[in-house]
Amino acid sequence: MTYTASSMKHGRRGAFAVVLVAGFMTLLDVSIVNVALPSIDASLGASEAAVQLIVAGYSLTFGLLLVAAGRAGDIFGRRRLFMIGVAGFVVTSLGCGLAPTAQWLVFLRLLQGGFAGILNPQVLGLIQDLFKGNERAKAFGGYGVMVGISTALGPLIGGLLIAFIGSEHGWRAVFLINVPIGLVLVPLAYRWLPRSNGTKTRWSWKLFDPIAMVLLGGAVVTIMWPFLVASEGGAGLASAPLWLIAVGLLILAVLWGWERIWVRQGGAPLIDSRLFRSASYILGVATGFTYFAGFTSIFVVVTLYFQQGLGFTPLQAGLAQMPFAIASGAAAGMSGALVGRFGRTVPVIGSMTMLISVMGVGIVTAVVPESQVAWWIIGILALAGIGSGLVISPNQALTLDKVPAEAAGVAAALLQTMQRMGTSIGLAVVITTFFMGISSRGYQTGASWAMWVITALIFATVVLNLVDRFRRQEGKQDASSIA
Image 1 (cartoon, rainbow, N blue to C red):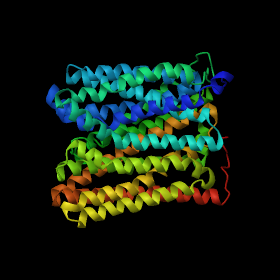
Image 2: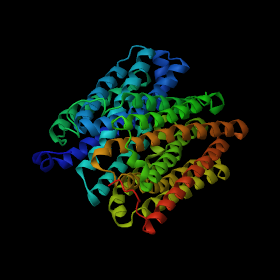
Image 3: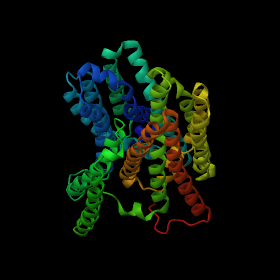
Image 4: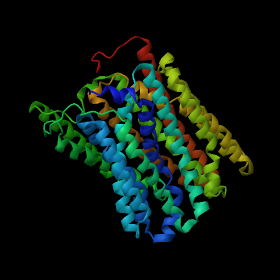
């Protein structure tokens, strides 16, 4: 991709700030809505299915478009796709905030998730375009700060808006808060983001395989949907249509066969096959999957336990997670410099710290009296935040380090898709375990059992990080480098 000299000279920091704020806005909407669901139910009379779709629908369409949007950004230019994503996200956020019925809210929430899916691959792709070498690692450190803070601050910001505006209209502010942010981002993106025409300027179906996009979208939907259903409302995996997973795997097999046919006919594959020949990329994607399966589940369990088990208000539950957010942001900010020196050792240490922390929460919820357990959890979460800050952005940087510019968007999108799928699967399994524990012995048992499931997921992350570290340490370069 080629950029004008002036765009690279003036505003690289501004461009970085723009993409981080945009990423923050879309990731915040994953968690901020949860605390508003009771208010939405009361205000619009939403059915249980509608409430479920307000949350799960956003995640579904978010994950559905990631790879296709990443490929489009590679071909037609990331700046163009970024601005489309931001503009669409603003319009749909406004619509969600003004929705007159639950049905309209569900429809607009699905569209909002789709525009988030268009936007997010461009965020990582632009970071790769803007920075090289150690600067890129530091930039991913900033990205890690944003991910950790957006995940932890969602419940707090949602609780604050509802507390100050009121339950009747506070839920609308949860969506409308995106509008002024987006309106500022659009002109700044036009001014500061690097201008690029992508790898191609003329349209051709040979460059953009529509059948592969439909097949991949179908696979993502059918695999994610059972877990999204299971993670909402506490029903668990028992009520989920698990047979859809088999359908999704069958669709993936068809996709693999179709891609081979498409390439033989001279078409460009949806996903660059060079990515699958890189051990560092494969291990990094697997690390993202297992880590997000455990990482994002922590906040759901803690929020449910604090509010339902210990009687915290939504605002109090959000405030209790602030030590994690602060510690995670601080660690992620330092991780960029550290990963440039120590490589995969950084996420190894981070995931081990996270493992010890989650095990600690599992122990204290089982043995500490209920009157004291909240303070123990809050303190341990601060340590977990340090560990998390040393995992997310270093893994992003190391996974995408050798990806060429022409495949940066789709590589980042595939990584994000696997993180989204990990989140859905992890939440379903963890929440099922949480409610099983509640039914057996109460909330403390439910929280403890859930934390041990999360421990297993984080342990898998530790193992993957160690495998990649030893592989790199032994000097085994990817035999088929994707550089």
